[in-house]
Amino acid sequence: MLNFAVNRSQTAYAMKILSVEQIREADRYTIKNEPIESIDLMERAATKVYEWIYRRVSRDKIIKIFCGLGNNGGDGLAVARMLFEQDIVPQVFIVRYAEKMSDDCNYNYNKLLNETHVPMFDIMNEDDFPRITENDVVVDAIFGSGLSRPPQGMVEELITYINQSPCIRIAIDIASGLFADRPSVAGTVVKADYTLSFQFPKLAFLMPENDPYVGRFEIIDIGLHPKFLDEVTTNNFFTLKQMVKPFLHYRTKYSHKGTYGHALLIAGSAGKTGAALLAAKSCLRTGVGLLSVHLPKMAQLPLQTSIPEAMVDSDESELCFSGFNDLAPYTAIGVGPGLGQADETARALKLLIQEAKAPLVMDADALNILSQNPTWLAYLPEKTILTPHPKEFERLAGKTSNTFERLERQRELSVKHHIIIVLKGAHTSVTMPNGACFFNTTGNPGMATAGSGDVLTGIILSLLAQRYSPEEAAVLGVYLHGLAGDLAVEETGQEALIASDITEHLGKAFATLKSK
Image (tube, rainbow, N blue to C red):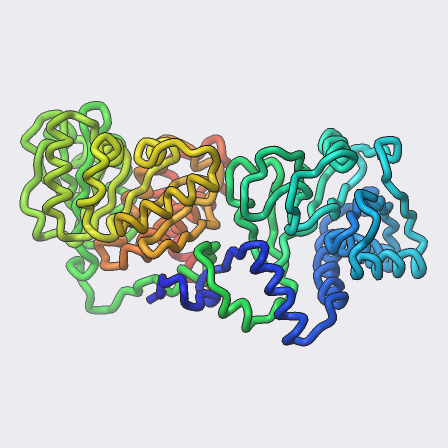
């Protein structure tokens, strides 16, 4: 089982997301302990960028590399030399925003000047900006991840000019002007189509407001020292296949339906039966042994007709959730999809929170009721899983000025109330009671469709019922949900994807996860 403590090594499980200072320390540690000269580490990093560009950029394109005066610029200069050695002649533009280059940048500048015929041009002011056409590929090596203040003056004008040009833009390590681990609220930032990030993803890549500046990011392994990577601690992780694959429970020959748990799904109300059906179907498809669905009377026939594998646990109300029966038989409880917010539903939910002993996952209207009664948060069973979308989270936690602040609010709530929060989005973030956060790596924009969240609730409920730990159920459930969506979208395309397509591809998602 994965140890979710943040003061233990997790490199075998998830990719770490480090701060700028930790990244600098990783470089220093590697230089000292490999040992390797800093210029040779730069050469190693530049080689990886060159190889990426060489494989992917068409030979009929003109590559224009904009280099600053620090080590990011040194990377760009080294890439230019390597391209020239393969008979690809780029154009290099030195952005002269200061008087002096870093030592390694200066070394690569002189090497490019003396060993190649790559054309180099200085940019001192706006008059020096080159013409950029749709046939150009711009490589951004102006600033790296150590940027301390927004670009100003000539550099700000240059970035604006690059952004307005009809070209493909590739950022080395991080787009110039973007801060790696804090908001970039007041500056001009290169709008990269591709970002080639060294060794780690940057926290900024996972924030929705930065999407125009990140584009598609790829992680490039530059061989930083494994001992440092193993021992460095962080609260932020990038969930990978090799992390969640060991979570999987494998079925034994003599197991039976009781082996795989009995889930209780409390869902549905007048006009919202579909949410209950979606969650129920995904719960079954995720492998639960038994599923009982607690429904108002008007929703029972649709359930029995469309999902005969599920059992009905009847509510006394015709239209909504108003109470529940004995909870003892269940190994996990899910509540919320299509629940509605009637007064009797709120009273029943409060009682459920007080009496539930089995692991609990809450979604949708259960969260909306919770946000109207914030004192109930203190009474949630330990490691209850909440699965809000951004608006539901805002109702729970209040408004924030940016997603960095929202992430810290999410983390604080998880720690304060000893709960797990699954904040749904492009890189769904899962925060733990110990403050760790796991960003998901699967999923696609086609999953932004009605009912997708109900499917996720059913998946997590099923895993909880099968006695996965709440931490495992949350992280694995989110990963499987996105993976099933990725497999489905290959057949449907993004626009045609609907929530039930995700459910129907859960079997393939399990098979893919189990594969090498």
